[in-house]
Image (tube, rainbow, N blue to C red; front, side):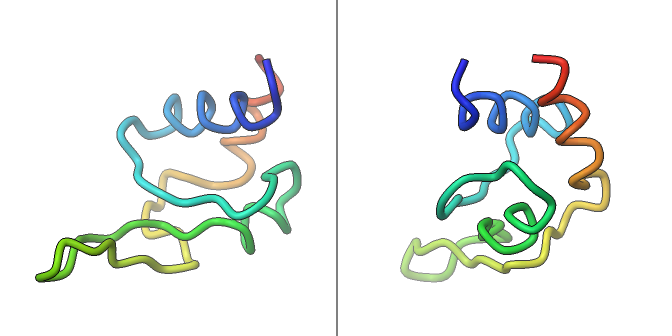
Length: 71
C-alpha cells in the first residue's frame, strides 16, 4: 500500500466521506497542515469552496497518523 493510499484509508477511518484535495504527500504534521485543502461546500457555479484549516474537529494529524501506522 502506498503512502497516499494509507493517508486516504486513514482519513476515511477517522471521518468517512471527508472531501479534500492534497497537494504533495501527507507524511508529517507539517504536510498535514500545509498540503491539504479541505472542502467546506460548493459555490453557485458548482466549484468547491476550500480552506487550508481542517473544519472537522475529529480529524487531527495524531488520529490520522495513528490509523496510517496501523496499515
